[in-house]
Structures are given as C-alpha cells and as structure tokens.
Amino acid sequence: MDIKRVKDYIYWLYYQYLLITCSYVLEPWEQSMFHTITVTVFAMVVYTAYVFVPIHIRLAFEFFSQIFGVQPDSTVSVLN
Amino acid sequence: VDPAPFSVILQLPLFKFLLQIDHIVHNGGLYKRPFNEAFEETPMLVAVLTYVGYGVLTLFGYLRDFMRQWKIEKCQNAIEREEQKDFVPLYQDFENFYTRNLYMRIRDTWNRPICSVPGAKVDVMERVSHDYNWTFTYTGRVIKGVINMGSYNYLGFAQNNGTCQQAAAKVLSQYGAGVCSSRQEMGNLDKHEELEKLVARFLGVESAMAYGMGFATNSMNIPALVGKGCLILSDELNHASLVLGARLSGAAIRIFKHNNMRSLEKLLKDAIVHGQPRTRRPWKKILILVEGIYSMEGSIVRLPEVIALKKKYKSYLYLDEAHSIGALGPTGRGVVEYFGLNPEDVDVMMGTFTKSFGAAGGYIGGKKELIDYLRTHSHSAVYATSLSPPVVEQIITSMKCIMGEDGTTFGRECVQQLAENTRYFRRRLKEMGFIIYGNEDSPVVPLMLYMPAKIGAFGREMLKRNIGVVVVGFPATPIIESRARFCLSAAHTKEMLDTALKEINEVGDLLQLKYSRHRLVPLLDRPFDETTYEETED
Image (cartoon, rainbow over all chains, first blue to last red; front, side, top):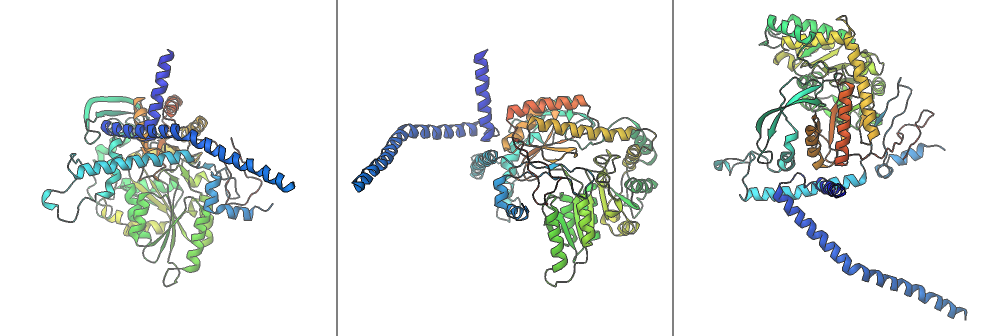
C-alpha cells in the first residue's frame, strides 16, 4: 500500500507540474518536446551547480577571511 | 494620529501594491446594512506562475503558427481561398492568436449542448474530439442529472412543469408563438400592455416598457436617451451591451474605476467644472451607467453613494439590473430594495427577464414621460419584433408568483431560499480556502483559478464528477484572473449544494486552487471612524 501511495503522490506532483507550466493543454508530441527541453535545462543547472558552487563558496570564504585576517594586524601595528 | 496624509500616500499605486490591500467596506452613514465586498489580491507566486504558463503557451503558439504557415501541418481554422491570397486579408490572423492557440485546446469546456430544461439538474450530451477539439462527435450517450451551477436560474423558474408552464401553454394555444410584427406596427398585444403594467407595479415606478431581447434593450435604448454633446460615465466592468449602446449613441464616454465612488466623483466634478472638451460649454446631459450585480466579479453597486452623487451633481442614473432583479432584496425587487432606497431616485431602471424569471427579453422602467418618449424613439420598439406571447405569459406568471399575488408564498420562499443558499455557499467556499470575489449577498460566485491550464482542468474534472460549471478566461476577464463562476439558484437544495461543495473541495485539493491567505485590510479611501473593522491577518 505504501508503494501505491508514494506512486500516487509522485503522479500528483507530475500533474501539478503539468498544470503550472501549461503543458496539460498541449498535444502529446508538444508535451514530449517541452519535457525534453525542461529536463535538459534542469540537468544543466544541476551539473553547473555541482561543479562550480563548492569552488565559489571556498573562494568567497577565503576572500572574506583574508580581509578580516588583515585588519587586526594593521591596528596592532598602528598601536605599537 | 491623523490618518489623512498617510492615506494619501497609500493611494499611490506602488504602495497599494506593496501592502496588498484587500478592500472591505465598513458601515457608512448612507448604508442601512453592512456592505461586505472583498477582492483578495492575487498572490505574487501565483501571478508569476500564471505568466510563465502563458509564456509557454505563447511559444508553442508561435511554433504551431509557423508550422501552419509553412504547410508542415494542416491549417484547420478559416483561411482565404487560393484566388484571394493577394487581396486584403479577410481573416485577421494575429488577433485570433489566442483563440487558435489556447481557446481551441480547452474548447470542450464551453458550448456543451444540453438536452433538458436547465433547472437545478440538467442533462448534458456527451461528446468526444479526436483531433484536439477542432471537431466534435457525439457518442450518443447523455450525462444525466448534472448539477447545474452555471445557469442564471436564480429563482428556479426554469421548469417544464408547474403553473408557469401551464399558463404559457394555454397562451400558446390561444395566441400562437409568433407575433410577426414590431411593437409600433401590429405587434402590440394586450398581453404586452398587461405585462408592462405589472412590471411597473413590481418595480414601484410609474410606467415600464418591455422588449424582446435584453442585450437589445441596452444597446438600442441608450442611443435614444443620449446623443452628441452628452456625457456618459460608465463603470470599468460594464457589460458589452452597455458599452455598445454607449458607443452607438455618439456621446462622450468616460470610465470610472469599478465601484469606486471617489473616481466617479472626480469625473463628475471635472465634467461640471470643465464642460465639453473644446468649447467648454456645459454638457447637455450626464448619464451614469452602472449595473446592479456585475456578473464577472459578483460585486454589487454602491447604490446609496451613487444616488447621493447623482443628486449632488444633478446627473441621471441608468441602472442595469440584469442579474439583481429577483435575486436581491427581501421581496426580490432588486438592488434598490436591497439598500432600502426609493425607486424614484433611479431615473432609468433597466432589467432583463432572462435570469430570474425564466423567460427572455428586457424592460425599462421609469417616469411616464420617459417611457412614452421611448415608445416612439427607441430603435427596439420601432424595428424589433415584440415579445412572443407564451414568453410574456411566463414572465407574468412568475412575476405574480414572486409578488405573492397568485395566493401562495412560493415566491417569497424562493427569494429567501436563494439568499440562504448564497450565504451558505459563499461561507463554505471561503472557509475551504478558495479566493472568492464579490459581495457576500450576491448569488454570482466567482472562484479564482488564475492559471490557464487549470481553466480546462477544472471544467473537465467537475464534469467527471457530474457538476456543470462555467469557467471564464481572457478576454472576458483580465488575462491572469481567469475564474470559475457559480450561479446559485433557489432550486438548489442543501443536499445538492453539499454535494457540489464536497466535489469542489476535492477538485480544489487536486488542482491546488486554495490560494487564499485570509488577509483582510479595511478600505483606506474613507476616513477612519469607530465602525471600521479590525485588521485581521493570519
């Protein structure tokens, strides 16, 4: 029974996707075209995020810590 | 704290947008009863997704048009013949873009043929389409007992049995069906005179005149009342018949915001102060066109304020009670009785017999001089065929029933049943979480759908569950505000309404239509006083 509920829920999510993007009213071949394009774009977004986002986060973290790392040194040197 | 400058800033459209104001009007000095009208603002996410949906449809529309142009696909809508290809185009291609590319895809939710009397339940003929709604074929089956939430059958007089039907059958055997003439020539029957006296008595006016078609009543009589050199102030959301009549008359037309009395007052002031545009002469006549109930919004006109403005600025009022006659007021006399006002304050009271009386045609009521003038000068009286006698008898019988003159309280009970049904239905839908537009007391209930795919899905899912609804999209409504419009009837029993509500609840969950966030803010274009409702938020 649980598998059926999960399948129904996934089908319901698919139905919402069809309604929101208006592919519910399109003919089957138009729907296939639209799904292909959407899935391709989504896959590219996911791949780009996977490849680039960790590197960008690490670089940003280093950049900001470098700024805050430099400041205490200069104030100490001024006081000295 | 003086709220006046604050409210002036909040009038600016940007701030209104940011605060997402819904309008709840509170009790003023002119109103003898609370006026609860609400138009909840479109949720931002829903609006964005609706535009996304329309964007996808537009792209696919361009693709299909391209394919049709280059003959990759067969073009199934109207195109010129080969010999006429070099002439001026006969079929305006781009204007029908929306019709070709969205309306055709969900066309099966409209124009459904019915094969029984459109009472509380109706029989719908089943049809299928094998080429995506370009052509339909009937399967031969009939879907019986569909609960009818789409007919304008407010008091339940759409029947094929009962006193009205028997009286109409008797008159049919006496007078026949056709009149074969216009009112002015040989088409003035004694039945018409009887009807007009009855209508005048029903409305509380001096005299009335009846016409064969409700649309023609508006479009043919407004040109008889106003002409060049007059000014028409018409509500933003007026019906096509009023707009057509106003344009045909040749008068100057100015539009005020829907049910917004400040906008109307500003226009009246400007008209009196500045006069006609070039010559600065005073306007010959100023006519205000409003409707009793606006059928797309479910809102009721603010008649006490309109009449106060009309008296202050000495203009005339034309009230179109197509949907409100029979449906509002304790005895069904319309929006004038609903607000407890004097019918003599409204100069021209127009209405139709199509909705609450189960017949066809329209009427105009007012002072005797006005109606006598219209009898000779109205295009509809001179050229259009007069009402058919069985239809006249249906109107007479149903009107007498509503007034209680047939000796029973059936009419009174119908009016009360409609009011109860209205309150119950609206309350339950609001509790479920749908966005419902309009006034608490109007029997027209618009339920917002917004997304174009949901228009078709809602219509189809409701028919699968044996409930017939009317869904409306562009161009009858603004492009993102598509809706399903329920018309309640006194013929609906509580069980039918409960069944319908249960199914609407299911479909609402299935299609995720419960957008309401229950955020109500008091109207800010009136000064605050003790009678303002508290601001409630989730």
